[in-house]
Image 1 (cartoon, rainbow, N blue to C red):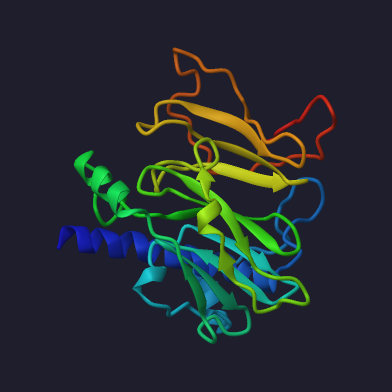
Image 2 (cartoon, one colour; image 1 turned 90 degrees about the vertical axis):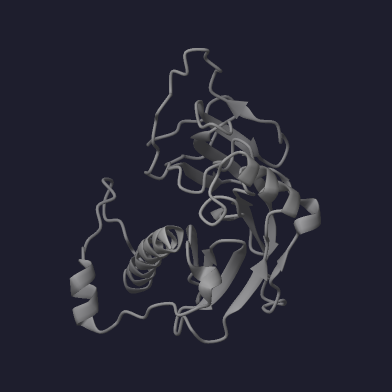
Length: 256
């Protein structure tokens, strides 16, 4: 009962955050004004309810515990990363023509996660935490994988393949240093010029935090901050998004 209540509490919180994010993105496509990136308009949850323009996602229980959002304004749709699933929703009506792909953690990983003392419902699953536009036809996505992060590409189709919605599970790769192990661990990431920049924990226990660069057109090797025996980023929480100007040949700057 306690686990169920906690799951509902966390899921409800995430659902609320998802609703707020959806409304802000739909109603205010130009979120930032000027160099400071401050929204031109701020609405509280109460004000959104009073406006009558809010629509809650009434999807199945699989949508509970939602972890990530990606807006595709051009096609009028929203990608929602949740527990073991990725949903594609229509912006005009979140509950119409719901599409989803399943991406659960392997049974072996789930069992090992339980043996390690993790919660079967709240932690030992594949919580989708990364959704970034890679190009016109693909999204790069990562999940916690029951404390073994994995990443792969989600095909969403171009103008000639509007119905495409396919996850390349067979080509999944390690998500370590791209996605946190823990589904509730704060982290940050941004994908620009097909490079993925991330700030996240690098181990199962969450002791070491690192900034990394991966992917890229020509060099797919990791670049990361130095490993320190003193864990100089120990306990660091990274809830804010990264800002990354276009990298040049020698230096990339990250702003948090």
